[in-house]
Amino acid sequence: MSLPPQPAPPPAQPPSAEPDDARRAAGVDVLQHAVGEGRLTLGEFTDRLDVLLAAPTVAEMELALADLPQDQPVVGSSSAAPSFSVFGDVVMRGRWRVRRHNRAVTVFGDVRFDLRDSVCAEDEVSIQGRTVFGDVVVTVPEGVEAEVAGFTIFGDRRLELAPVPRQPHTPLVRVHGVTLFGDIRVRSQGPGENASRWRSALDNWTLGHPRPPGRPHRL
Image (tube, rainbow, N blue to C red; front, side, top):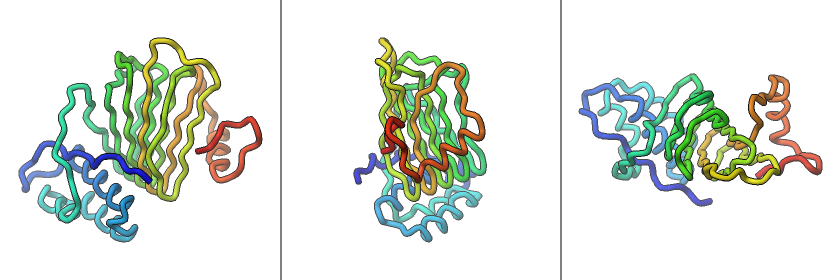
């Protein structure tokens, strides 16, 4: 199993400061990489996650990450600041500007990116989703090429694209997900198409069951 490069930490904060969302999101990334590499057991992961989320200062939060590798920050002008949520979803849909690099982290929540009505000036787009007890779901318009990579722990990974030719002048969407107790799903849908609540429940049920011939291939 290949792993992506270690996440880059955000700019430094004073040790006595309250950790901002970007720093907590980077910390969750570090813990997820550590459990994926076998550096931490699931029990150790949950213990450290509790410390990271409850820490009132940067110094106390760093105790959960002290013996784990962290890279130096990498600055990118076309990158969006990471979105972070605890006990809630990160949802991007409607008319919004897609950056070249996009990242969201949730704990007990989903990451949902809908690109169908978005504005994008890039020829290639990267979306990184990190969840603990949540799913990563990316929806692209029909005719947009997409790839999915990453790994799940107690979850599934699926790519479901309509069998139509690629539309000219559309970006390549690269999705990289890391989930603990969650799924990674990249799909295409037509304009205004929205699965009903019962269909969503059916899709969730079929994650662990064989699909009949002609249905989208499950990775």
